[in-house]
Length: 105
Image (cartoon, rainbow, N blue to C red; front, side, top):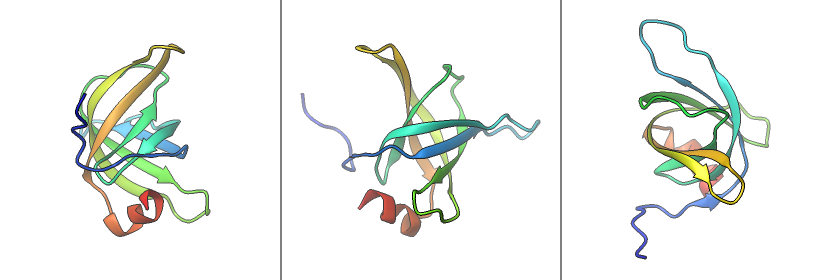
């Protein structure tokens, strides 16, 4: 199978919080972890499946610096077949590239 990703992914577990972008109400912020990251997006573990839409994402690095604030859109979600773990792929729509570079490189 041919790889179609524009950016290579780095397997990394980072603390993540996300919420659905909703102009009408304050959305609940959910904490989880990533399973990979690239300049194009991030893979996250889910507690529950979610409706498609825009996400606000905060990525916490292990160095204790301020979290990276990003926005993205949900592009897929499903089960990791061997473990029944729910996962999702989020494509970045807004991200501070210079800060993200420290995590991806």
